[in-house]
Length: 362
Image 1 (cartoon, helix red, strand yellow):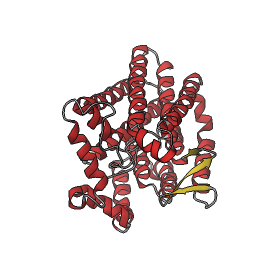
Image 2 (cartoon, rainbow, N blue to C red):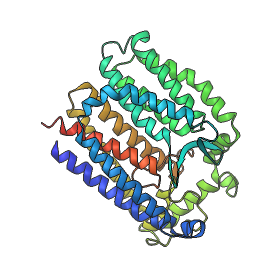
Image 3 (cartoon, helix red, strand yellow):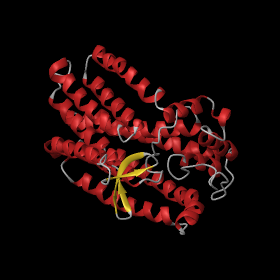
């Protein structure tokens, strides 16, 4: 599978390069005003990228099968971090959310670690319980209980986007492993009242839904971010207004270098730029599925499939939000958006994916 590894590495390099260029382009003016240094976010991103590359190489070098021994301790550590980040004075609060640990100038988001760690645990669980996953008490219920605990802690931050992502990821893997469809449908039906409460009964989330349905009805209020995103994408035309020449990044579009970086790509590089990004992710998913298809060992199979789902779903959601076909979720565009924890753990995930491929060369 050497050709697949070369393809995935090449795609990753191009995505990272696009990210580096566009983070500087989209954040330079904002960083100069807020931090006094136009390269502030670029420099931090490069630091996170360097750390991510080192950890990716480490993830490629280890025997990934040995991760099974560490799956439970890692999950317990992740749950512990999700608990203590909620404690005032320990977890950092920003814009009403308590999701980060602050260590000097750097911050760490435990939910990003949890997504990958929980994926490793689920892959190990499904590999061990292949013959019992159709049994409700022995195979299905234990994993759902742990999923419920993790999602509860993530929602408390609050971070509904990552909660839904984790839930969808785990249930999909359980379906692939052979869990009974009626059990999965039961969980989905039971989650509907919870989602209703978490969305309809929470004003700011309901406002996001209303803004998604018609951002132009209140384009200066709750629909401001989505309407500005659409303006940016529409302004770019076929080939864009030119690299560095975005107007929307000049304090019109919030989160221009994070959640809505694709909109700036669309404005500066046009449809050609956004289409290139979408095609790169499509090729990444396709090459990743080739690894899944050639992996004969259960743990590696579920781990590699989970990594493709994890990165692919984040890309789909971010792109969907940017173009206005999904409500705002706050998920970054993998390898392109600014965001330290997300970048680092996505890089580790790629290292593990390449590791699985290397161990199953045909």
